[in-house]
Length: 235
Image (cartoon, rainbow, N blue to C red; front, side):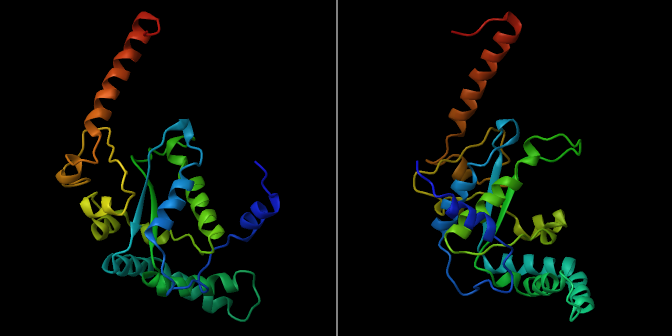
């Protein structure tokens, strides 16, 4: 494959946090976001354990509440820093001014995309599964940049986990599945919390392959046990 490194370098060198220059009126198609997520999922994962999930927030009420959380968490600091640096020529002057603008307009963006990892970090500091989200998120930003769309990191809005969970109340339902490709499959290693993380309509629906997945896992576990106990490969 003949790839012009100049094009790759251009994307890498020009992908910046876009705040004041975000086009808040430009429509962003769901399929474009899904295509970029597909590309982002090509990023490496620690231990080859793929456990990333992506949440696309479109609902205006949810965006309003996330925007309010962001303002409460970050706006006082950003406003104070922007005021202190204004007119000084300090390298962070424009950064803090644009950050303040974003905090005031987060709810106006077309979509908020939140990459997540299933599970909870145990704080042991070892590289692995929970260190595998940043490279995928960065690939997502690069993919959007290549398509002429700007992105920016927004982490302060998610600082209060309990409040974010209360605001979002995310659950995989039929409406969410309708945003995916028509041949998308719902997978879960089980056990699943019905009505909390996935609705019964999805879990038992035609796009679900959870039972086949669980059965395959059982066979894989039995093969692993035989290999470990008997010291031979399963034919």
